[in-house]
Image (cartoon, rainbow, N blue to C red; front, top):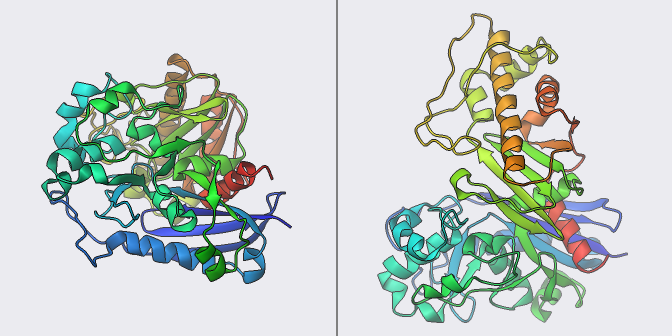
Length: 434
């Protein structure tokens, strides 16, 4: 039997699942790690002998594989890894990191946005302080300690470097992780303007997500009891892996993640991009995965209600009755999608005496924001919405699901699988042709 291992790396933990060709899980594993603080202003250079966060990632990766039972490991045909988008690090020619990684949310690239705007087209995906290219430009422009030898270094994303530890081929990435590095998934090449940046390190060679990069090294195969022909496939980002896990596969199908924030991802026949709203499209085979993220979401609800209160109060909400309350629920000023206004104020008044009515108004207002988000994607050229799958904690709330279904005008359902590791396992399986 052939089995396929998917590994998901988050900010403070990692998970793994092994599946067969029917998608049935055979083993699972998890591992937590604590991210050390690196500050936001200094150059996070690793001195000789220092291992830092990459060492924690390596330990977690090997721990996950070791947790998989030996009989399952012996049947692994392929492995794929997803990581957090725009988490990057610089390595030497031996693959040893020379810097601490800059995590997905690290915004020190704000210092070089003027330089980035001078080379990148207007409204391009990379024009964000947290993009991979902004981080790279910060390294090149501000990293005095490494600037002298930058051209001898390799830029890798989190998933790239973890894959390298297994297959040993340095400098390979996928076009999901590389989107925010400036790679064009439509023309399948780096744009000419990126080479106007001086002192670039080696940019990764880009392949299709799931494409086999190489077999595990002899050392890895021996250490973990893997098949010598076990392929390590190019990875993806954690959010796309979660989308793959949902089962959405037809144009017009979407996944809304109801977590701390509200994240929309729509499968479209056409590409839609607009940096003003944080909207960008990933290539997914012959289709495009486009979407955006609103600052509304579960974090606002938890300002006013406990989980137990949310569950009990929701039972008294009639999802077929529209609440007259018109809120814009935010935890603090500022919104990007579907409204682009950095000063947009939270609107949470008037607040009725009845907590059920207040909660109803909040859920109704969030549903309106979600519907407006999908409408904006449509206005930018994306395929019309036909079905929404729901992930995140809010997926468990049937009243909210009913309200959203009324506003969206399409079926809303909860997928059987939402784990990113499961999506990466599917990617590995499809990459080697099952």
